[in-house]
Every structure is written in structure tokens, then in C-alpha cells.
Image (cartoon, rainbow, N blue to C red):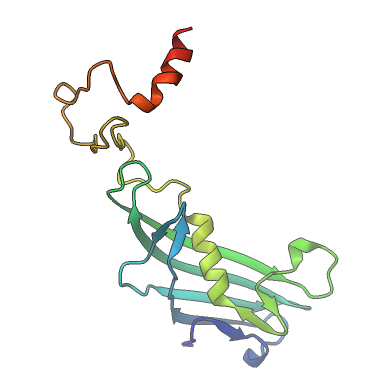
Length: 173
């Protein structure tokens, strides 16, 4: 069954207890901001799958899709890409006293699949996206990217950044 991303009317599925349905839709992830930098899916709308199972008093839900985000590397500011596969599960059992059995994405018989999808991406995204695992970052003196710099040719002498003089003095004491 094809569905639109966003709000899914679970009651309209009219599932009996023990019944299940699979909804396929195109995911539309919004850009994610990490450290004031935006990471966005590059012109792609990945296919997503939502499995809905009716329990005796609520729903068991599973969301699956694969995506990637592109943005600046946190070390050198070159383009970085983070690819991942999402396989998220939620349970919603209205009337339960256990918070683990109440989904924040389900309310009034509807599932906010768009918000769940976005939260799943944020949880899966690396805290510090890098262009490559061994990224050397930027030179602290001149700001040149060090990934491809020749270590023998890239020297600044002992002076270093004048703004760090006081810290160097503390280190010497």
C-alpha cells in the first residue's frame, strides 16, 4: 500500500487485533543542523517502509529506510557524507502507566511518521561527521587543510599563533 509521508491515520487502516499492514512511501528528510552546520540529503527521496501491527490495545510500529546526508566535515570543512540504514521500532499501548509503552509519535489514532523519520535520522547521524576517518583537520596557525599537506613542507617555526602565547607560557612553567 502506498502512503504519503507525514501523518498516517492508524484508525483508518481498520486493523483487527493481530492484523498488520505495510505502507511504502518516499521519505523526505529535512536538513539536520549540527553545530550550526546544515546536513541535507542530496536531491534524493529514499523509499521507506512502515510496518503497522495491531495489538490488543494499541500498535507495534517499525520504520525502515536508507539515506545519506552531506555537509561540512567538522575537522577540515571539506564535504562530508554520512550514510546509514534506519530500522526503528515503536510501541504504543494507550492507557499504560509505563512510558516505554507510549510512543511520542502516536496520538489521537494517528502516527506522525515524518517526525519519527526525522528523529531516527538525528539519532543515527554521527555526532561529528568527518570527510574521512583519518581527517587531519586544519592547521591551527594558518588554517590550511592538513589532509593533503606535506608535513615536511608545512612548517611555521616556533612562534606559532600569537593568540596562544599566554597558554604556551603557562605550559612552560
